[in-house]
Amino acid sequence: MADTASTDAAGPHDDGAGRRDFLILAGGAFGAFAAGASAWPLLDSLNPAKDTLAASTTEVDLSPIEEGQAITVKWRGSPVFIRRRTEKEIADARAVNPDDLPDPQTDEQRFGTGAREQWLVVVGVCTHLGCIPLGQKGTDNKGEYGGWFCPCHGSHYDISGRIRKGPAPRNLPVPPYAITAESKLIIGVEQPKGGHGGDTA
Ligand code: FES
Image 1 (cartoon, helix red, strand yellow):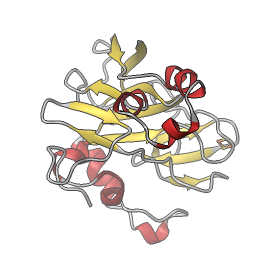
Image 2: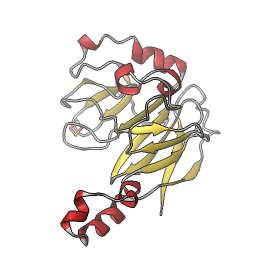
Image 3: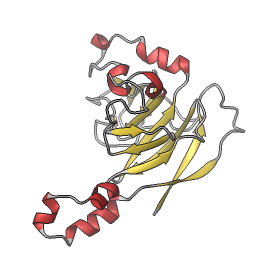
Image 4: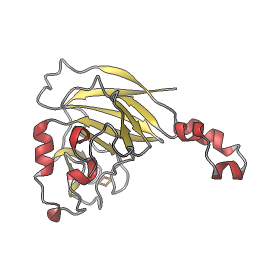
């Protein structure tokens, strides 16, 4: 099963020419998982098989994504925002004092360090009442902190996906994910210790 995701340059390389659409092959879809699970005996659901675990993950080839580009994929029925951040965006995100934040978290706590830090991976659902924030397209309103803006009631998220202003109570959630040596992102599993994704905070 394939999910369609769109890329959109939104950084300093955003001249409009680099925009393109491509297919992201998802490792599985939550819909298929749910349909299968409903027919299973209870005991089986307590011991999820390998294929069940695979069905609850989404795999994304990161290699075509350029610095400053963002794409959206689906994971367990929710949009997940993926962005290859620029060095300036990473530096801006890391310069923030977490004590000044409504939901204090450092960027390092959210995305780790090393090779992993350039990749932002968040569930793209506003933590106020569940709207999908703007900010994935280069032409979107990104709010006062250069990340995402929820138009429903005016929540502003920064380039780390942290809530900075507005009624949303929490940062955009970071799902479990791993990055392999082949630049494959697997959403739904934790990064193995010592894995390619770099040190984790
Ligand atoms: S749902 Fe996003 S601000 Fe209310």
